[in-house]
Image (tube, rainbow, N blue to C red):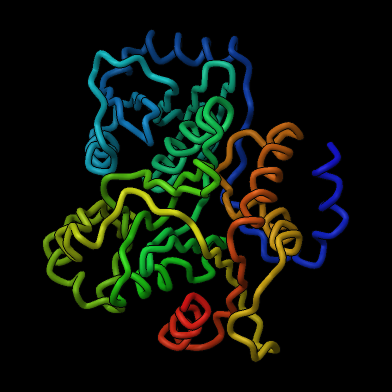
Length: 333
Protein backbone atom coordinates (compact mmCIF):
# COMPACT_ATOMS: atom_id res chain seq x y z
CA UNK A 1 0.00 0.00 0.00
CA UNK A 2 1.16 3.53 -0.71
CA UNK A 3 1.50 4.77 2.85
CA UNK A 4 3.51 1.67 3.80
CA UNK A 5 5.96 1.93 0.92
CA UNK A 6 6.58 5.60 1.73
CA UNK A 7 8.38 4.56 4.92
CA UNK A 8 9.94 1.15 4.26
CA UNK A 9 12.80 2.62 2.23
CA UNK A 10 13.84 4.76 5.23
CA UNK A 11 13.80 2.32 8.15
CA UNK A 12 17.13 0.60 7.73
CA UNK A 13 19.07 3.13 9.76
CA UNK A 14 17.23 1.94 12.84
CA UNK A 15 17.55 -1.83 12.35
CA UNK A 16 19.60 -3.50 15.05
CA UNK A 17 17.47 -2.46 18.04
CA UNK A 18 14.54 -4.78 17.28
CA UNK A 19 13.51 -7.02 20.21
CA UNK A 20 11.51 -10.09 19.10
CA UNK A 21 10.05 -12.07 21.99
CA UNK A 22 8.50 -14.96 20.03
CA UNK A 23 6.70 -15.85 16.82
CA UNK A 24 2.95 -16.13 16.37
CA UNK A 25 1.56 -18.77 14.01
CA UNK A 26 -1.65 -17.79 12.20
CA UNK A 27 -3.92 -20.84 11.98
CA UNK A 28 -7.16 -21.65 10.19
CA UNK A 29 -10.53 -21.97 11.88
CA UNK A 30 -10.50 -25.70 11.14
CA UNK A 31 -7.18 -26.02 12.97
CA UNK A 32 -8.60 -23.98 15.84
CA UNK A 33 -11.62 -26.32 15.98
CA UNK A 34 -9.28 -29.32 16.13
CA UNK A 35 -7.47 -27.79 19.10
CA UNK A 36 -10.80 -27.20 20.88
CA UNK A 37 -11.91 -30.81 20.27
CA UNK A 38 -8.63 -32.21 21.60
CA UNK A 39 -8.86 -30.17 24.81
CA UNK A 40 -12.52 -31.03 25.29
CA UNK A 41 -11.88 -34.74 24.73
CA UNK A 42 -9.19 -34.63 27.40
CA UNK A 43 -11.57 -32.84 29.83
CA UNK A 44 -9.14 -29.95 30.25
CA UNK A 45 -11.50 -26.98 29.74
CA UNK A 46 -11.79 -26.53 33.50
CA UNK A 47 -11.37 -22.84 34.41
CA UNK A 48 -12.89 -19.77 32.75
CA UNK A 49 -12.83 -16.03 33.36
CA UNK A 50 -14.21 -13.15 31.29
CA UNK A 51 -12.45 -9.82 31.67
CA UNK A 52 -13.09 -6.27 30.51
CA UNK A 53 -10.25 -4.83 28.43
CA UNK A 54 -11.32 -1.33 27.42
CA UNK A 55 -14.89 -2.52 26.91
CA UNK A 56 -13.84 -5.65 25.01
CA UNK A 57 -14.77 -9.00 26.58
CA UNK A 58 -11.86 -11.45 26.52
CA UNK A 59 -12.33 -14.96 27.87
CA UNK A 60 -9.51 -16.99 29.41
CA UNK A 61 -9.84 -20.79 29.41
CA UNK A 62 -7.21 -22.89 31.15
CA UNK A 63 -6.55 -25.75 33.57
CA UNK A 64 -3.82 -23.82 35.38
CA UNK A 65 -5.00 -22.47 38.73
CA UNK A 66 -2.02 -20.11 39.14
CA UNK A 67 -2.60 -18.55 35.70
CA UNK A 68 -6.31 -18.08 36.46
CA UNK A 69 -5.58 -16.51 39.84
CA UNK A 70 -3.08 -14.01 38.42
CA UNK A 71 -5.40 -13.19 35.51
CA UNK A 72 -8.17 -12.57 38.05
CA UNK A 73 -6.05 -9.98 39.85
CA UNK A 74 -4.74 -8.37 36.67
CA UNK A 75 -7.94 -7.31 34.88
CA UNK A 76 -11.42 -5.91 35.50
CA UNK A 77 -14.08 -8.60 35.38
CA UNK A 78 -17.02 -8.91 32.99
CA UNK A 79 -20.37 -10.52 33.85
CA UNK A 80 -20.48 -14.18 32.89
CA UNK A 81 -23.58 -13.62 30.74
CA UNK A 82 -21.69 -11.28 28.40
CA UNK A 83 -20.64 -12.94 25.15
CA UNK A 84 -16.89 -12.79 24.55
CA UNK A 85 -15.28 -10.89 21.67
CA UNK A 86 -12.13 -13.00 21.79
CA UNK A 87 -10.57 -15.89 23.68
CA UNK A 88 -7.21 -17.07 24.94
CA UNK A 89 -6.58 -20.70 25.85
CA UNK A 90 -3.55 -21.41 28.03
CA UNK A 91 -2.40 -25.02 28.32
CA UNK A 92 0.65 -27.25 28.44
CA UNK A 93 1.01 -29.70 25.57
CA UNK A 94 3.81 -32.27 25.47
CA UNK A 95 3.24 -32.83 21.75
CA UNK A 96 4.28 -29.22 21.03
CA UNK A 97 7.96 -28.41 21.30
CA UNK A 98 8.40 -25.52 23.75
CA UNK A 99 6.51 -22.25 24.02
CA UNK A 100 4.18 -21.51 21.11
CA UNK A 101 1.37 -19.09 20.26
CA UNK A 102 -1.27 -19.85 17.61
CA UNK A 103 -3.95 -17.38 16.54
CA UNK A 104 -7.14 -17.86 14.57
CA UNK A 105 -8.09 -14.36 13.37
CA UNK A 106 -11.57 -15.40 12.24
CA UNK A 107 -12.76 -16.48 15.70
CA UNK A 108 -10.26 -14.19 17.51
CA UNK A 109 -8.89 -17.17 19.43
CA UNK A 110 -5.31 -17.44 20.69
CA UNK A 111 -3.80 -20.71 21.91
CA UNK A 112 -0.83 -20.27 24.25
CA UNK A 113 1.10 -23.50 24.70
CA UNK A 114 3.76 -24.37 27.30
CA UNK A 115 4.06 -20.84 28.68
CA UNK A 116 5.90 -20.38 31.99
CA UNK A 117 5.77 -16.56 31.97
CA UNK A 118 2.48 -14.85 32.86
CA UNK A 119 3.62 -11.67 31.08
CA UNK A 120 3.01 -13.38 27.73
CA UNK A 121 -0.49 -14.46 28.82
CA UNK A 122 -1.56 -10.95 29.75
CA UNK A 123 0.06 -9.50 26.63
CA UNK A 124 -1.86 -11.95 24.43
CA UNK A 125 -5.13 -11.05 26.16
CA UNK A 126 -4.38 -7.40 25.43
CA UNK A 127 -3.36 -8.24 21.86
CA UNK A 128 -6.60 -10.13 21.13
CA UNK A 129 -8.60 -7.20 22.50
CA UNK A 130 -6.41 -4.87 20.46
CA UNK A 131 -7.09 -6.83 17.27
CA UNK A 132 -10.85 -6.49 17.80
CA UNK A 133 -10.72 -2.83 18.86
CA UNK A 134 -8.42 -1.84 16.00
CA UNK A 135 -10.64 -3.32 13.28
CA UNK A 136 -14.08 -2.54 14.69
CA UNK A 137 -13.67 0.64 16.76
CA UNK A 138 -10.38 2.20 15.58
CA UNK A 139 -8.70 1.95 18.98
CA UNK A 140 -4.96 1.43 18.58
CA UNK A 141 -2.62 -0.46 20.92
CA UNK A 142 0.53 1.20 22.24
CA UNK A 143 2.96 -0.97 24.16
CA UNK A 144 4.46 1.40 26.70
CA UNK A 145 3.76 3.69 29.63
CA UNK A 146 1.18 6.47 29.63
CA UNK A 147 1.09 9.22 32.26
CA UNK A 148 -0.48 12.58 32.81
CA UNK A 149 1.71 15.57 33.70
CA UNK A 150 0.11 18.91 34.56
CA UNK A 151 -3.09 17.77 32.88
CA UNK A 152 -1.43 16.64 29.62
CA UNK A 153 -0.86 13.08 28.45
CA UNK A 154 2.67 11.69 28.06
CA UNK A 155 3.58 8.41 26.33
CA UNK A 156 6.83 6.44 26.59
CA UNK A 157 6.86 3.85 23.81
CA UNK A 158 10.12 1.99 23.13
CA UNK A 159 11.52 -1.51 22.58
CA UNK A 160 11.69 -3.84 25.58
CA UNK A 161 14.74 -3.43 27.75
CA UNK A 162 15.41 0.23 26.91
CA UNK A 163 14.31 1.66 30.28
CA UNK A 164 10.72 2.76 29.74
CA UNK A 165 9.56 1.15 33.00
CA UNK A 166 12.23 2.93 35.05
CA UNK A 167 11.48 6.28 33.41
CA UNK A 168 7.72 5.75 33.65
CA UNK A 169 7.77 5.06 37.39
CA UNK A 170 10.36 7.78 37.91
CA UNK A 171 8.08 10.32 36.22
CA UNK A 172 5.13 9.07 38.24
CA UNK A 173 6.91 10.01 41.48
CA UNK A 174 7.18 13.65 40.44
CA UNK A 175 4.56 16.19 41.51
CA UNK A 176 1.60 16.92 39.25
CA UNK A 177 2.00 13.49 37.62
CA UNK A 178 -0.37 10.51 37.56
CA UNK A 179 -0.26 7.08 35.91
CA UNK A 180 -2.70 5.86 33.27
CA UNK A 181 -0.90 2.64 32.32
CA UNK A 182 2.55 1.23 32.98
CA UNK A 183 2.76 -1.21 30.06
CA UNK A 184 -0.05 -1.11 27.46
CA UNK A 185 -2.73 1.44 26.61
CA UNK A 186 -5.26 2.13 23.88
CA UNK A 187 -5.55 5.34 21.89
CA UNK A 188 -8.47 6.66 19.86
CA UNK A 189 -9.22 10.01 18.23
CA UNK A 190 -12.21 11.73 19.81
CA UNK A 191 -13.28 15.26 18.82
CA UNK A 192 -9.91 15.79 17.19
CA UNK A 193 -7.89 14.73 20.26
CA UNK A 194 -5.80 11.60 20.85
CA UNK A 195 -7.41 10.10 23.95
CA UNK A 196 -5.42 7.39 25.77
CA UNK A 197 -7.17 4.80 27.96
CA UNK A 198 -5.85 2.35 30.53
CA UNK A 199 -6.06 -1.38 29.93
CA UNK A 200 -5.48 -3.21 33.23
CA UNK A 201 -6.86 -3.02 36.76
CA UNK A 202 -3.58 -3.93 38.45
CA UNK A 203 0.05 -3.97 37.31
CA UNK A 204 2.39 -6.92 36.77
CA UNK A 205 5.63 -5.81 38.35
CA UNK A 206 9.14 -7.20 38.76
CA UNK A 207 11.03 -8.05 41.92
CA UNK A 208 13.68 -5.44 42.66
CA UNK A 209 11.57 -2.40 41.84
CA UNK A 210 11.72 -1.60 45.55
CA UNK A 211 15.48 -1.11 45.16
CA UNK A 212 14.79 1.84 42.85
CA UNK A 213 11.55 3.07 44.41
CA UNK A 214 11.43 2.56 48.19
CA UNK A 215 7.67 3.11 48.45
CA UNK A 216 7.20 -0.36 46.88
CA UNK A 217 9.08 -2.09 49.69
CA UNK A 218 6.15 -2.77 52.10
CA UNK A 219 3.88 -4.28 49.45
CA UNK A 220 6.66 -6.32 47.81
CA UNK A 221 7.59 -7.81 51.20
CA UNK A 222 4.03 -9.15 51.52
CA UNK A 223 3.56 -10.23 47.90
CA UNK A 224 3.94 -13.79 46.61
CA UNK A 225 6.19 -13.74 43.54
CA UNK A 226 5.78 -16.16 40.65
CA UNK A 227 8.53 -18.29 39.11
CA UNK A 228 9.75 -15.27 37.12
CA UNK A 229 10.03 -13.16 40.29
CA UNK A 230 7.06 -10.98 39.35
CA UNK A 231 3.61 -10.37 40.78
CA UNK A 232 0.37 -8.51 40.10
CA UNK A 233 -0.11 -5.75 42.66
CA UNK A 234 -2.69 -3.05 43.32
CA UNK A 235 -0.67 0.10 42.63
CA UNK A 236 -3.28 2.25 44.40
CA UNK A 237 -2.02 0.79 47.67
CA UNK A 238 1.44 2.16 46.87
CA UNK A 239 0.90 5.59 45.30
CA UNK A 240 -2.75 6.31 46.20
CA UNK A 241 -5.84 6.27 44.01
CA UNK A 242 -5.49 9.98 43.22
CA UNK A 243 -2.30 9.20 41.27
CA UNK A 244 -4.15 6.74 39.00
CA UNK A 245 -6.23 7.97 36.04
CA UNK A 246 -8.31 5.98 33.55
CA UNK A 247 -7.63 8.25 30.57
CA UNK A 248 -5.80 11.33 29.36
CA UNK A 249 -5.36 13.43 26.21
CA UNK A 250 -1.97 12.78 24.67
CA UNK A 251 0.31 15.72 23.91
CA UNK A 252 3.87 14.36 24.19
CA UNK A 253 5.29 11.12 22.77
CA UNK A 254 8.73 9.84 23.84
CA UNK A 255 10.71 6.95 22.46
CA UNK A 256 14.13 5.83 23.71
CA UNK A 257 17.61 5.00 22.50
CA UNK A 258 21.02 4.47 24.09
CA UNK A 259 23.83 6.14 22.13
CA UNK A 260 27.03 7.02 24.02
CA UNK A 261 28.29 9.04 21.05
CA UNK A 262 25.33 11.47 21.26
CA UNK A 263 25.60 14.08 24.06
CA UNK A 264 22.03 15.33 23.59
CA UNK A 265 19.55 13.77 26.05
CA UNK A 266 16.30 14.75 24.35
CA UNK A 267 15.76 15.63 20.70
CA UNK A 268 12.61 16.58 18.84
CA UNK A 269 11.70 14.29 15.93
CA UNK A 270 9.38 14.96 13.01
CA UNK A 271 6.47 12.61 12.40
CA UNK A 272 8.01 10.77 9.45
CA UNK A 273 11.21 10.14 11.39
CA UNK A 274 9.29 8.72 14.33
CA UNK A 275 7.26 6.44 12.06
CA UNK A 276 10.50 5.18 10.51
CA UNK A 277 11.71 4.34 14.02
CA UNK A 278 8.47 2.55 14.94
CA UNK A 279 8.45 0.52 11.72
CA UNK A 280 12.06 -0.55 12.27
CA UNK A 281 11.08 -1.76 15.75
CA UNK A 282 7.81 -3.53 14.91
CA UNK A 283 5.87 -0.64 16.49
CA UNK A 284 7.75 -1.49 19.73
CA UNK A 285 5.19 -4.26 20.27
CA UNK A 286 6.24 -7.89 19.66
CA UNK A 287 2.79 -9.10 20.79
CA UNK A 288 0.77 -7.75 17.84
CA UNK A 289 -1.09 -10.68 16.33
CA UNK A 290 -1.74 -9.69 12.72
CA UNK A 291 1.02 -7.96 10.77
CA UNK A 292 -0.21 -8.12 7.19
CA UNK A 293 -0.24 -5.24 4.72
CA UNK A 294 -3.77 -4.15 5.64
CA UNK A 295 -2.93 -3.90 9.35
CA UNK A 296 0.38 -2.20 8.61
CA UNK A 297 -1.43 0.44 6.58
CA UNK A 298 -4.00 1.02 9.36
CA UNK A 299 -1.24 1.54 11.92
CA UNK A 300 0.81 3.86 9.73
CA UNK A 301 -2.23 6.03 9.03
CA UNK A 302 -2.96 6.17 12.75
CA UNK A 303 0.58 7.34 13.57
CA UNK A 304 0.57 9.85 10.71
CA UNK A 305 -2.52 11.44 12.25
CA UNK A 306 -1.12 11.13 15.77
CA UNK A 307 2.11 12.97 15.00
CA UNK A 308 0.20 15.85 13.44
CA UNK A 309 -1.32 16.41 16.89
CA UNK A 310 1.35 15.15 19.33
CA UNK A 311 4.97 16.26 19.88
CA UNK A 312 7.41 13.35 19.27
CA UNK A 313 10.84 13.18 20.97
CA UNK A 314 13.64 10.64 21.22
CA UNK A 315 15.36 10.33 24.61
CA UNK A 316 18.96 9.17 24.95
CA UNK A 317 19.16 7.07 28.14
CA UNK A 318 22.91 7.39 28.70
CA UNK A 319 22.60 9.58 31.80
CA UNK A 320 21.10 8.81 35.21
CA UNK A 321 17.31 8.33 35.40
CA UNK A 322 17.11 11.52 37.50
CA UNK A 323 18.83 13.68 34.87
CA UNK A 324 16.95 11.99 32.04
CA UNK A 325 13.58 12.67 33.68
CA UNK A 326 14.60 16.28 34.34
CA UNK A 327 15.37 16.67 30.62
CA UNK A 328 12.00 15.15 29.67
CA UNK A 329 10.16 17.49 32.03
CA UNK A 330 12.04 20.46 30.58
CA UNK A 331 10.64 19.85 27.09
CA UNK A 332 7.14 19.29 28.47
CA UNK A 333 7.28 22.52 30.49
